[in-house]
Length: 163
Image (cartoon, rainbow, N blue to C red; front, side, top):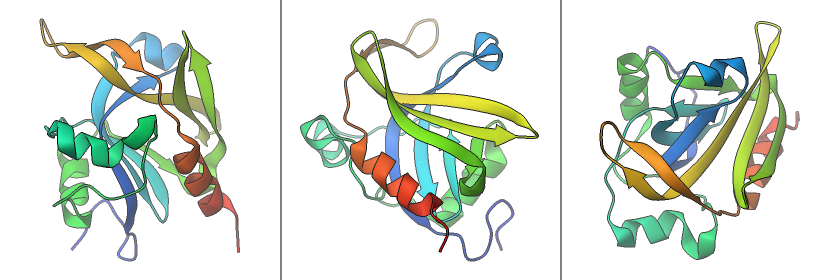
């Protein structure tokens, strides 16, 4: 039985080792988070959880500097539900609350920016991957990698359209 997901909710696509950046005043008080970016048929979810993947596996998700469409191996809806229970600070963006999905360029690097409303306030999150990361004193990105998010933008906007 699911606690955090609806019974008919299914994972459409997911990406590991994504860095989430909260923008605005909320981002001022929070450090960047590394985790999994997940698109379900009802929500976009960012779970702060590190998953180690090999270079060969990474090519499957980020071929030709594009964010690919696909699912993480051995990660299903029950794993997502469990991760949401363990990480109450996960970012959950319902598709009907999303107002804008686009690419934004900062310091010659493209990030996926998702804008949505929550309790009447607008929130913005940027997502990207890194070339290099520091592990001391805690894991933080040093240099971000330029990535083409067009497949994810197209997929999310196609889910936003009401039938």
